[in-house]
Image (cartoon, rainbow, N blue to C red; front, side, top):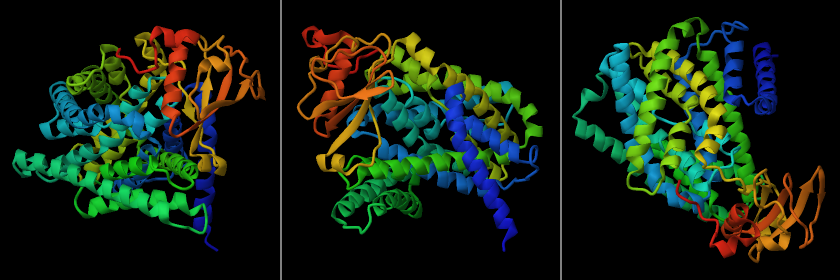
Length: 501
């Protein structure tokens, strides 16, 4: 018998099941689930059940493992057709935007809190990365134009790579001053470029292998796909490249390939990402010391206001200069730069390196994430409506494990008809979906049925649409057009393309 293991499994299973149940509760209450998970960690820690945990190095290691899975899922679920047009802006936000954010926050906390330059820049570096888990979980519940969602998701998947490198450089003995500045800049550029190459190699090689492999069980394909993304990270790390960028690039290439059992792969990755999020947030809550958090409120608020009101808007403005993004879209990008577990994980790097003041940095980042996650996620929907960047009729993909769809090379989409959408009153045949796309089911007042061509939509209807891969984008553009102009969309020259703000 192993009583210690039995108790650990009992506690771990109970926490996991409570966390899974909390997802539905947090959605109903409008509270971000990551805060529930952090609260669970604090509750089983020294201030709750009395479990003492202060191993920052182990937290850093497990946190990196969780981020690999979360970023891999973000890459696998990203669609290249929506990612390609915003790739330049996402790359600019992940490089130029990161540098601007670090400098602005660093200067602000140095002047307002009296911190030395190394610690002040560490504040800026740790807080400059948006959180993939928070962005993916929050934005996919909102009805936004695809390019806004794609920009924020791509940024959150890509900016971890340079930020981790910069935090490690600043946390070393002597900080970033141990080498000339041009050496450090060259090193970061080399690691990012090589990381991207490793990701391409893993992604293309994995696509080729999975298409030709005749694995004896369908359940092995999801394991192999996720394993390839982990291989990309490990290969990049061994070559002293950016493993996180390699993971995201490999995930995008694999997720957009016509792989066997693709829907099963996406479903498996989604489940793993949820497990990683739950474990990561609970672990970070367990590491926190509640008795010290009161003293961290002031630096957290100062750093957070500098980040949200100055650093983020300036970084977005500087990054968006060469691109066609309107002021309303830039304003939403500024407000939607969500921070979550990633800054807290990054704060464990100087903590494990025993940088002076790192314990206060960790506490401040923990408090900042709690406060500003509540503030920002709770206001994203009204801010989007106020800025008029909402997209009332966006079809979302449903992950289903079904062999017929695989053979058809098709996706199953869900579309809602919300209040204000001009889809209401439109007949099915007036949608004019391209050949290869069809409305297969309508759910109205809890009753599902197959609609006829003369069936008229009304507010509150839910539609299931099957679209082959070749016409999916065209079908989505058509639905966006009809949602804006109604049945006469084509006569108004409206084709559903994304518009500048």
